[in-house]
Length: 366
Ligand code: AHG
Ligand code: MN
Ligand code: MN
Image (cartoon, rainbow, N blue to C red; front, side, top):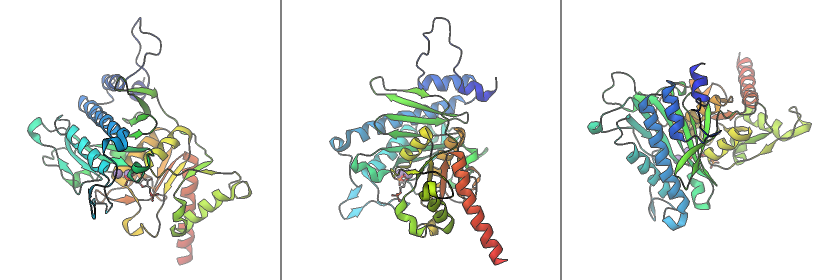
């Protein structure tokens, strides 16, 4: 049995174990550790992130009763993060929960967050581990105040060898170097979706017990789809190939695609990606004239890379439209990129529109 198979397949049950015994996240990770798929430190890291997500889930679930809705800062003096975006109270709280949970385990070298200007080395008072953790503590935060699903996204890299004081530059590794990635969605149920590089697995929080329980082993995204996710209000700002691609989707059975497409847009990437992982689809936040100067809207290190690893591990594809996402070499921590991810054949179709447009342009210039 290969390492991949041993990490994804259920371990042999000892005699007398009831059929299909529930598998907790703890058991899943321990079995992966025994199979050699993860180190004890990576197991601890994922457990710590999962525990922080449970705390965030409780805060999100309290809503107005917890006094956690609304903007951070004071009236007239909104708190603005490094992204230039106004922070919600829950953005700040979720960031603090993740920082505190990861401060003392000795499993991390440093962490970086969408909500912080720079990465932070962890104190070496508790020993310093070999991993770098990146997170979007609360994704979709514009949806908090209207009680729509939000989430947390995280990505794990190795700290380069011989680095004693990790800085931002040590995080600048392509997404293919991630050793784990995942998200937690705070929706009707709280779910953790995780990859440790051997498939993508979904766990549902048993709120009474307080444990994440494995509910889907080895998620698989259908290769084809009739559903797309994009913010259509940006249509007039898109590049020509995106205009052409979505134009053909909207033309339905009468257009070149020969089938009708449905559209969904939650505006929480976690919720949109979770739907696509579950039933297929293509998610896109393309380049548009409003975000072109920044390179795109979504963040490579906190959003695009972890989601792309999860999607690829479930048989899907992820691209900037012009390059496989996981091969993008980051130049800075808060870098933004255009994003296309989901059902393999649909992502390839969107990429083909970009390839053809670029080729036509190159030929017209020659
Ligand atoms: P965040 O709340 O972490 O800043 O992320 C919001 C992102 C992403 O979750 C979502 O897909 C996208 O922004 C929505 O953008 P629009 O509001 O432009 O549709
Ligand atoms: Mn986000
Ligand atoms: Mn966020």
